[in-house]
Length: 157
Image (cartoon, rainbow, N blue to C red; front, side, top):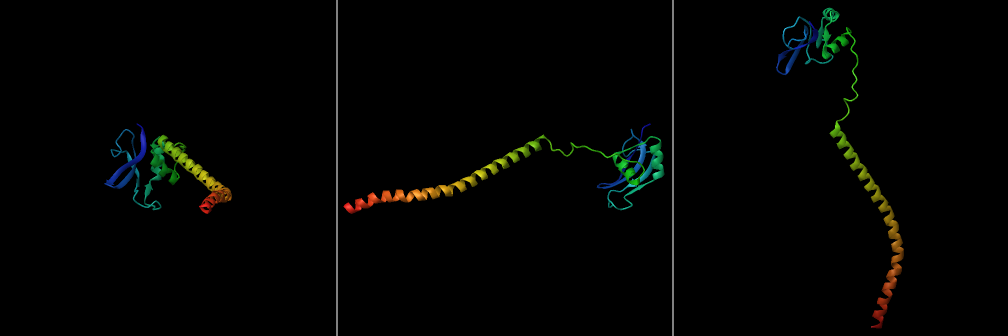
């Protein structure tokens, strides 16, 4: 018989309360169990000593006869110093999915295009005053040449 140390849910709707039990792994979660070895009340504060109460001797016994703890119970056992829990590492868990990656790339591309357009506009703004100055220097000569014949026409009439 495969024995599991796991949580069995009790309590009312939206008010969970768990028993830490040693049970046959083939039984239902809240079904028949072999022995209750502790309690877990998730509604209490994390630093509250009554949040997890565990009978350490019975937990050691069940681990000694081959019981496998669930992930949550393994955390409790590790916190109590009964059994070391190896740290998990899933580097792919934090990576965004394909669509999110595509959206991020599109956003980065748009930002890069906007930055290039801004630089081009700044360069044009820098070059525009220089061109206006050169036009301003050329313009009076052109205007005077254009005005001179007009003045002559008015004088001749």
